[in-house]
Amino acid sequence: MIRTINNNIQDKKSIYLPEIATMVRKEQMTDLDTYFEFELKDRPLGHLYGQFVEISIPGIGEAPISISSPPGKGNRFEMVIRRVGQVTSAIHKLEPGDSVGIRGPFGTSFPMEELRGKNLLFVTGGIGLVPARSAILYALQNRGDYEDITILFGCRDPGQRLFTSELNEWKSRKDIDFLETVDKCEPGEWDGNVGVITTLFPLLKDIDPLETYAIIVGPPVMYKFVIMTLYDMEFSDKHIIVSLERHMKCGVGKCGHCQMNNLYVCQDGPVFVYDTIKHLKEAI
Ligand SMILES: Cc1cc2nc3c(=O)[nH]c(=O)nc-3n(C[C@H](O)[C@H](O)[C@H](O)COP(=O)(O)OP(=O)(O)OC[C@H]3O[C@@H](n4cnc5c(N)ncnc54)[C@H](O)[C@@H]3O)c2cc1C
Ligand code: FES
Image 1 (cartoon, rainbow, N blue to C red):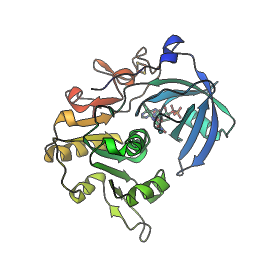
Image 2: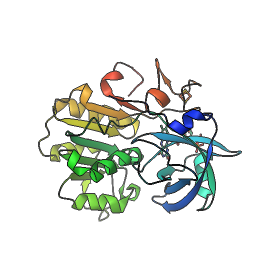
Image 3: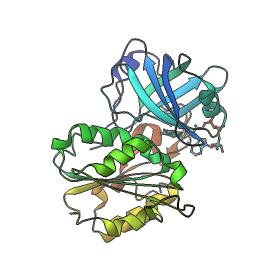
Image 4: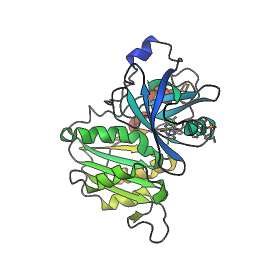
């Protein structure tokens, strides 16, 4: 069900050779997270939902970052990058017109074609919304192809909400269910749900576990509790799809940095059907 899609043009070149992409838009989203739009000169990126690229700054380094936009924006694609270290801080200092190196797209994708006709339950936490958004926007653009769509989003506090105008639009849509929560907030700062993401599940209307696929992307601590809740709802492992994050270097299955037993998360993942990894102690 989960396939690795390698970009055709990238296949013909060295997988280690970055292409130049130009920043066309930059918007600060939270204290640490900034939205960027980039453009490749000669071609669309050719990615699928949930894939990532290696983004580099000469003389500084390279980092794997998920693509946040769905395919179909011509040569442009979007990312949200959290400033945590050398590469991500250097990217935050760039301005529209500046260039970065891009390798990819790499990795497996959310199986949006195979999920047509099914109910989708997206469970996203923090910056996990970024890769999930490419699949969410695709499903919303092709709303008629899917049955019920439910989106759950949780973050630390109201200041950490990403894509706030989109979240507000999702909240007002009648053809999807969108629920969000924050772990904590100051008095008067937030009139929504407070608590970890699993506190949203009792608020959901009936979900048929046989016809629904859950897509989970969030911080490591979230997976175990969300999966336990899905088990309580009688979801099978084949109906749970996760995207995992590991330290990566090459992004193409050569260096072993992302290895998880016999799997390379950069190539066999980051998107996995849960039944293929649940036996791996270090997976979740
Ligand atoms: C498939 C994939 C998709 C990703 N998508 C995004 C995204 O969309 N947006 C985003 O902001 N980040 C994303 N990340 C995380 C991002 O790659 C790291 O934050 C980045 O590599 C840090 O690079 P740096 O040079 O700025 O930090 P460094 O200077 O290398 O490190 C800063 C700190 O972050 C830690 N760190 C670095 N990489 C990781 C990692 N993968 N997991 C946990 N800790 C790490 C280091 O140990 C160190 O403590 C993704 C990672 C993977 C594997
Ligand atoms: S990052 Fe090198 S093998 Fe996965």
